[in-house]
Image (cartoon, rainbow, N blue to C red):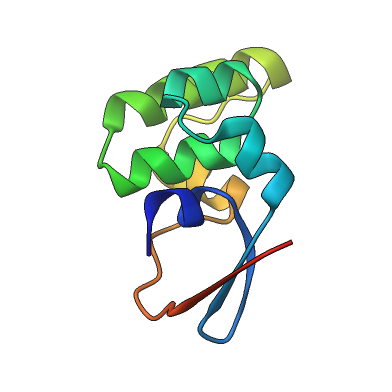
Length: 97
């Protein structure tokens, strides 16, 4: 699965990823920091996970906590919040809506 497809996926249908075209257009090509600063937290988390970017996840968590008044302090908590744990390995198709 390509990074952009993973970042902007909103759901799955069997072996197909469903990608939000509007969000993809708004965030494609941005760094994790830029995504977080635009409020695109889930795509930022996906990019960080795909690249094993611990600093990106920390920046996302710190920023999210500041904005929301939350107190997330572990990667697992933030992954649970956004429902993203890993890159799925059996995706063969992508549908953009």
